[in-house]
Image (cartoon, rainbow, N blue to C red; front, side, top):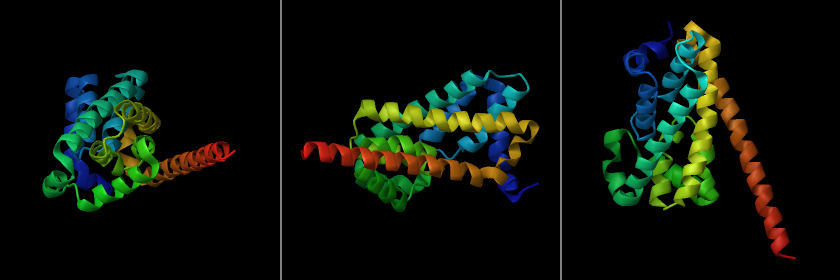
Length: 210
């Protein structure tokens, strides 16, 4: 049994119990928490749900949608927290929810550089995906764009984790051994997005310069 599994065992047991008891609403509620700064990893929630798909308990589309809409609701709550509370409040009290100044500064830099679209590709980054909604709120990102990018990024992330859970079946708890591959895939998607974005901006600038 891996060290990671031993450390996360209480969280894993809670997720298993919660989803087993509530079904799809359990996935929805847990993913709200995951996107609202509560450290319950989607890397546990969605693969376990994928395992339940593999044994016929759940429907794959319903699992992905429950997780994705949960992410959207949690992200909107965090977005409005950023708007209402402001940067100073978050820096002062963020430590109580394991949110560090470095988290905010890093995501703020990304937001300033890439704008609203940061909501999309940060949804594909482990850990960062949990906090990105705060700087989007502080920076007062366009709400409609924020919501759309959050939904699309979460849809890709949750589909991937659910599929991994389906593939692993009973061995879904071993996902930590393969987490590096998920990170590589996420990094490739993000690099591809950045390249696309830079090319698009350059073409727009060239057109406006004519």
